[in-house]
Image (cartoon, rainbow, N blue to C red; front, top):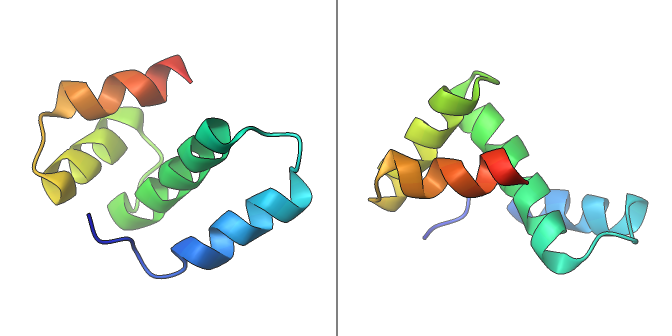
Length: 69
C-alpha cells in the first residue's frame, strides 16, 4: 500500500507527543487521521470506504479494526 503524503511526519509526531502508545495503537491513530484527510470526512463509514477503495479490500475488513480501536 502506498502511504499518503505526510505519513512519516504524522507518525513521528504521534511518537513524540504520545510516547506511551504501543506501535499498533500509534499506527491505528495515524491511519485514522490520514483516512479523515483523504476522505474529507470524519464519518467512520466514509473513512472505511475510502481506505477499502485505496487498499483494494472490502469495507468490513477495514472498518472493524477502526471501530474496535
